[in-house]
Amino acid sequence: MHRHASACIRHIRQDLHKLADWFKACGVTSVAMESTGVYWFPVYEILEQRGFEVILVNARYAKNVPGRKTDVSDTAWLRQLHSYGLLRGSFRPDAEIATLRAYLRQRERLVEYAAAHIQHMQKALMEMNLQLHHVVSDITGATGMRIIRAIVAGERNPDVLATYRDVRCHSSIETIRAALVGNDRHEHVFALTQSLELYDVYQAKMLDCDRKLEVLISALNTKGARPVGKLAKPRLKTKQVNTPIFDIRTALYGVLGVDLTEIHGLGPSLALKLIGECGTDLRAWPSAKHFTSWLCLAPGNKISGGKVLSSRTRRSSSRAAALLRLAATTVGGARQRWEHSIVGCPHVRVNRRP
Image 1 (cartoon, rainbow, N blue to C red):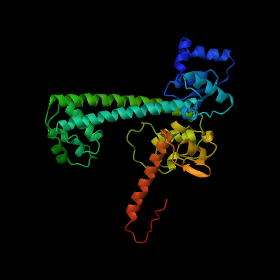
Image 2 (tube, rainbow, N blue to C red):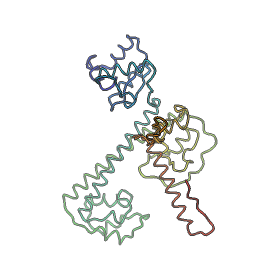
Image 3 (cartoon, one colour):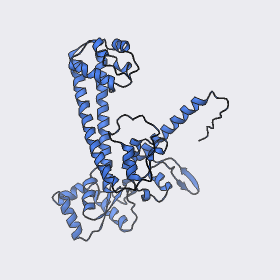
Image 4 (cartoon, rainbow, N blue to C red):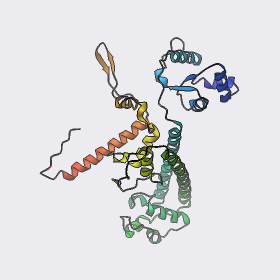
């Protein structure tokens, strides 16, 4: 079952539950289906809930259909391969981790939507000749949002706007005042107002996701491994931008029994996303090599006649692989900063080998 699923569903009056009943009546115990788009989601979840063994197959591993290719021949080919035990199912976490992953991905989309409206606010400010982004590091910080909300509320005096400076802002009041002498036009203020309202909407939706995540992780906490000892002090005390409002590090420690943030490059938010993508049990992969191959980080192995044809890494849209690459980049940046800090010391030799 794959792209022709819509035709099958129409044949049974678009009722997936009747499809499951029909499978039961036919004595079907195991179902193989291709992972094409998002169409497989409801079919997979309903069949899994009804007790079927559902194998989700990567389409690239079952695409070589002999003869003329049609949806029906694809289905027959999958059934034949599955009856011989030649199909390998894709990794699917358990239901609770799948729910966690869905909330995390939804939150990630909300962050992207909010980021677009931050750009719209900055554009409106520049059209008003308000160079706020030059005097604050982030216009959504404490100083920037106070000034933007005051402008939307009707304040135009740069002397008054500069007084909204937060004490932690590096720019002085005089510098901020000089950047806020702009051109007041109604259409630009209107665009700024709407962008701010939409930004606030997405921030509120992100808070809703955070509450869902906190409740779900608390439920996982009761089933997780018991932590050994108390949680050590964090290596980094700086809170990252766009992270959930609850204490991720403590919550994950209660679920896993270990502190993943002790690994260099893994912060609390990154560790939470990895759990959402890979789950809490890595026994789905027999070894580290299998896990690396699943991430598409291992080199290819195309050999014919004893000659290596290609060893290129396969292309992949794996989110877990992207997260691990981000962690590696963080570690590499920290190493470079450390090398620059000691480059002037004559008694220290830096080994640059990987």
